[in-house]
Length: 442
Image (cartoon, rainbow, N blue to C red; front, side, top):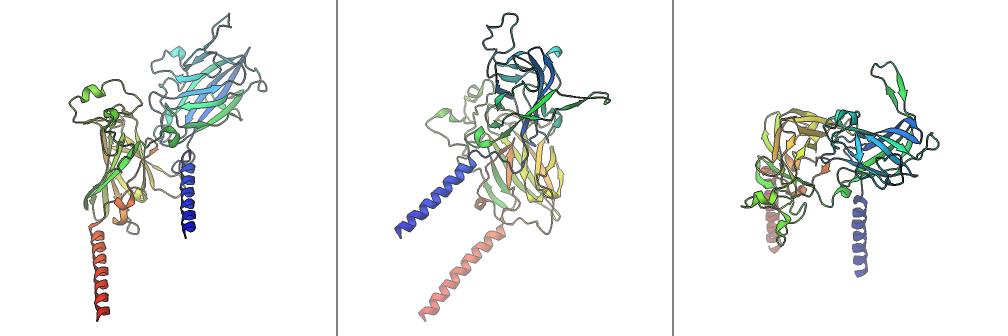
C-alpha cells in the first residue's frame, strides 16, 4: 500500500515538473500564432571592400509593441568586417579602430550593438522609417509605424553573393530580454517599386532573421493581474494575493505607500524600467478591472478600468487584448479603439482595445491620473448568453502583450439564485439524511 502511494506521489511530482519545464521557455502565443519580428537585410550596392545594406525591422506581432527606450539589435560578424558608416542608426560603441590609418570606421567591434536614432535627427543622417527612438508600434494598432530601418556600409567583407558571409548570433532587446532570434537565412531578393510605379528594381542579395517573444524569458514574475465585480453580487474579487510578488515588510523600499508624507521624494527622478509599485496585496504594476455593470432586455454592458500602480512608468500606446465568447456580438464601444482579432478562421472571440490618439492613449504613472476606462455594450445571443457560472467574465486578458493573471474560477462572483440553489440543495441533502436516520431507528 505504501509503495503504491509513493509511486503515485512520484508520478504526480514528475508530471508537475514536466509541466513547469514545458511552460518556462514557451514562446508560442495562441492568440497571435504567427506573430514575430522579422529583420531583413537588403544589399543594395557593392563597394571596393564590401557592401551597402538597408536593414529593416518589421513588427508582425498583432498587439505587442516596443516602447521607449526602444530596441537594440546585435550580432556577431562571420569574418573581420567593420562598419564604415551608418545612416538612420548608430552603434553604441566604436571599438578599437587603431589599425586603420586612412580613415576611422564607425565601428570595429566583432559584436556591434545598433540602436535607432532619435526624432529630430538631421535630414542628411536619416533614411525612410528611421529615427523613432527605437519605438515600434504593433501591427494591428498602427502598421505604418511598425517598421524601423537603418543603412549600414560594411567593409572588409565579400563583394559578391558567394563571398559575403552572413552575420551570426543575432540578439534583440526591446528594451529588455524576451526575444530569441533564429539564424540568418538567404531568401529571394527584395523587389523595390519606384515612386512613379513604372520601374521595379531588386536587391543584390537579401537575408532574413526571425525573432519570437517569450514572456517567461522577459521577466520572472507576471506584470499584470485581473480583478472582477458585478451588479448582481456585492463581492469584489481582487487580484490573487502575491500575484506579482509579495510585500516585504522587512525591506521598506519594495513598494510605496500612497498615503506616505514623503511620497513625492520617493518617486522623484527619471522613469526607469525597474518598477516601483504602490503597496498592494497583489504588487502588480498593472491591474485590469472587469465590471459587469448593467443588464438590459436584449443587451448587457461592462466597464473596463486599467490602473497603473507603477510610479516609474508611463505607458504610451498601451493596448489590451480580451478573450470572451460574446465579442462576436459587440454592439458599441466608448472612448477606446477596437479591432477584432481572429487568429483562427470563423472564431471571433478576441478583441484588441487601445486608447484614442491624444485622448487616452497615454496611461500615466501611479497616482490620481494613473488609470483609463471605457464601457462595452454587447447584444445577447439567447442560445449562448448567461450570467451563470462566470460566463460574463473574460477568459484571458493581455496588457501590452503580456498575459495577465486571472482570479481562480471558483472565486468569480456568483449569481444570487445560483448560491440560493446551492443552499437549498445542501438543506435538501441534510433533510433526506435526517429522515433516513429516523426511518432506520423505527
